[in-house]
Image 1 (cartoon, rainbow, N blue to C red):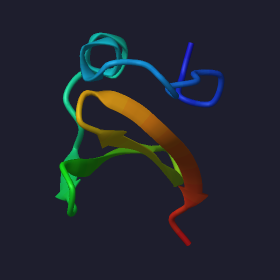
Image 2: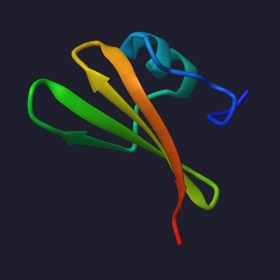
Image 3: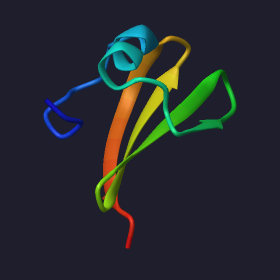
Length: 63
């Protein structure tokens, strides 16, 4: 099962790491938030964490 069917909201970082491995890029933000990026085919999936919990996911085309 890939990123498309996965729902990360409320999941801990460890669950995302176990499912997909380390992210290709980590973008640090304010207030202990960070976004993990994974490249998938022609798109990018991102998971945003606040502390240890996933609060948002997004996928977009790389065009």
